[in-house]
Length: 475
Image 1 (tube, rainbow, N blue to C red):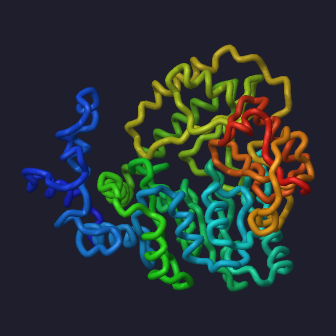
Image 2 (tube, one colour):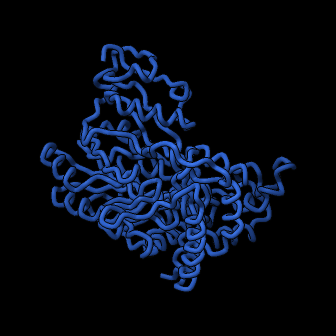
Image 3 (cartoon, rainbow, N blue to C red):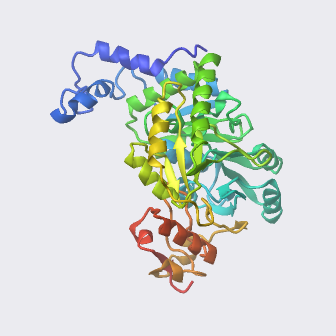
């Protein structure tokens, strides 16, 4: 197929040229009707913000430009089928789990999964067994093969395995043996690869989950590729899950009015990847390496390196661990004060997400980072962990089936030890539940939540930010 073609974007350009008057939705009429103070920013984009009129195809029954765009996507990633998503990896994870599983199925889930996976488990009425990841230098390094083998012996009725690869921090453990072992046991393997849409580039980028044999894979194109926010991909990579079922579930969970600018950007993000030649990639990596080399000179932070034999790192995710007395959140505040906005911070780190381009002004970026971190006092405390402590594997209680008739009570988080959580406690970002609803709260979890709050981190609900949470009465 012609990977230099961008059919969705080109179709929108043709639509814009042909249309004299818009007598269809949306109501901004190609940007004609819009608040004056914002027109200069939105006008060009709104000219492409069309709907499913004649010539622009139908996302759920594609026969023209969208069919060709998804076919090119599938051709690039070498999949059985690939799909555009306009509600992010969040909807992709819902689709993936609901398409692969039936109500009541037992399913293995990597415990440091995104909250959207938890929502899929709840909606689907599934029986999850959470497998805890190994921890390496305070970062999640994925679940071990030994733990998966042990869990398979303990739960022989399991149907699927959900992995997160890479982590939010770009940590890419060796998941090939996990996928192979799961397949030997008859499991379907689902991978939330939200942060790895660019792993198709090959070394020195880690291998992608599709190459490693996963059955269904979700990617957030907008995270590391030049796609608009909420743009994502869903890939079918085997016959273990019905294509018809995936398509039916996608139509249930995703909007019936998909954004054409987002879909065009997904088409163009694939085009961008497919047309990066060797010289382009060499220039991108050379610029990245010079920037990281300069960051290594800064005394206030330490650049985290891969650990051969344990995990690789996405070279475009730069983890800066504090080497001074400042917390990661304090480093983030200093950087923002100089106009540098990190992807996230935790009690001891900041994360920089780089772009796939040599045109980024890394020289100026380094100067701003250097100036932001000047004069910080030396380290006088022990470094912490970016992850929360979990038991090796646990079958979380289903809150609706087990505790639906019990009342709930708000307590200080410190008083919740041994009780069953009646709500999630989720630091955000990265959106990974520290405590799950239906999970019996442990002392180490409480201590980790306290550390996060003390360092200045925030949670996804106001109650947790006040140091309180809901538990089930009598638990």
